[in-house]
Image (tube, rainbow, N blue to C red; front, side, top):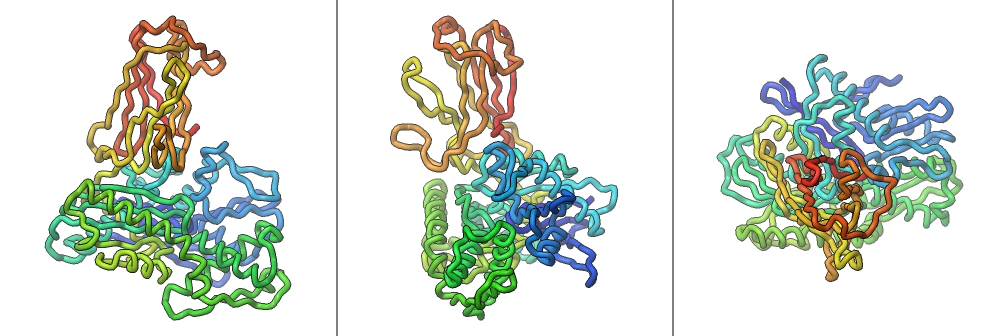
Length: 525
């Protein structure tokens, strides 16, 4: 029986299959006039052709756009994952200059169906074999992103066995490589790995405590908008500055084509020999002479962007040391650099400068490390425990509605149940002072001195809890006014919060006066 580990990445998506004791990266094929293209990564790209509304995904989308360039009226989305936050902002996305808008869930499901078909076409799984997979997401992913990712994978035909954070998967891959999994060496003593995961669109940092086959995430954090896409944008801006052109002067599809070329140029740096980057504007229909950008000047632009990531890494290591005394920032700590953008020599240089007494390891599998770790998890070869990367709770009223406060349900750092364990549970009993309770759920990275959410606040579902016994608990009273009243203050109502091993949070509303119970999944509507 084959099982998959899938890393749905910002720029590339990678699948690793385990079959009869062997882990193999799925090879994706595309037939062209020049022959068959075979590659380990499946571009996380979507191209919608103008007029016909034909939708191309993955290799075909990337190839067609690269060959034909920016066709007028086409919609090109090179990083669908980075747009998942749009699911929390109305559920649709568009492109500047075009009136058409597209449903995020529909686009993602279509992309994942094409991935499914490509995996089957690889011949690495049997035609009628179910696609059982462990899938990954950023450690700092918000609830809406997790919900829509899991849902679309299932609608695309994958059986989601488990989910885990990308840095955790990389730590599992590293440990498996260094120990008996592939190296044939004896298990090492318990130790910590700090994972610095810099991908195409997000940065994640986690500290994972490894004890044999047991992996416990001590701390996690991240930056939602930092990755290779941003570095491509900087290189494009530097080129346009030399051409004395404003980014606003470019039509969207020309800008995509230039960013694609910037990415190609950026990736030449990883070998350490390239000192100058080039761009010829004439290749893209822009008047001007070829421009050159010294790599040293490019690095100077990137340093301030990377500094917060290095600071985040230090923060999670210090927090992990507070929770596990055997974690030491000055000795015995391995920092594992993963993600395609970590191949930039500047990244390892800045990390090594900031942590001179740590052992810095740059992965030899920048694009496949996460998927490999997920595949190991899919085979139940290890046990792992994640933690909440953000605070989760809801805004309530106090002092008879005169003030708000943040009721913290699951604080950041709270361990999430392991696969197979019962859900984490929190219960709140109280006497209502309204006819309807407006439960406003959100998550945040920090809490301010006033006790309210502060720092990267993300809204989740709003739930209406009818306290009035005349209103059925089975429906949301969306058209009823909320009234401040003591009529129901003698009643007792209850909210029970549960979090399962996938990080899915539900609330069970209980109204004992009418013996009614209703359970809702909490996510961004």
